[in-house]
Image (cartoon, rainbow, N blue to C red; front, side, top):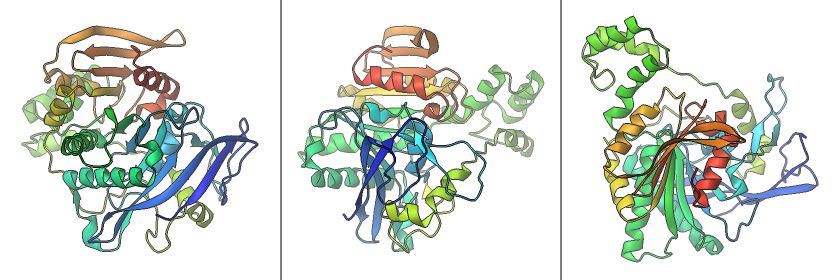
Length: 403
């Protein structure tokens, strides 16, 4: 792997202008490595990643591998919009390079974080042969595992750190698959032996029909759609709207549930030549960076990942499942249903959890080491909307405290 060391510093609200060193202010925030790891030798495929050390104690703090959903949304989105130490200055684009500021609620407060552009075709990850872009759930999880093994071989100082696999949205399907693959490697005695402790998924897709069909009832319960409209959907779709849109009328009603997000500043920033040089992006690999690459082939072959949850939880691994309670993409009501299907007894019943004396959401803990939490007022990517609350949540959970 060939890469550059990128330093990030902060000084109050001062902005960050990317250069070869990302030198910002006198106070050193963290060090970052932006590099490639080969995961597909046959097709010349390499994953690009951003590694950010913990601001606390890198030698002992957990190592967290972050996967962004989509599939094929760049991990840079998770870095600057969700859990990383930098965020864009909210301002209208004026033709100059967008500015970044320090994000005080970064998960790097307590963990070393690898933000991984995966699968191939996401962010700056690339394949020299087009066939390498033909991905599915299994390929993604296997290549993520291969990446992690290779990364730890080259960074042995982190092998003993507690390891957590994390991600949100569609990555909620993949995270348990990667964790299970790690477990299989441990059972096989594959070196290096990873210190897996558990996994973290936010607003997670599971692949089951419960994710999709819960959208209608959730929108109705939140007052987003009227009683009349809800009844029309139920009648025309036979109660199985997303799973089985049996009529054209049913399909027409479903068009009301289209969501669009605009992250224009990230496009201008990531496609700047100075930025690409600083990140050590290989020339002629990715012509234009896009936040989510929807045009490359991807097969969603996994219908449900419940079996992976069963396997991991039965072996004693910890799990944190969190959901923004204003998410219409993967409503928390559907997440609660599949968690219930795991048939684990309740250790601590439904209650509120708090940050700064205010209700931050609701939580429940199960005997299988799974903690479920809602984040009050948060949408599909919960840390983007409620960063302070989500940092408090992850800090408490990592340390073994009750939320």
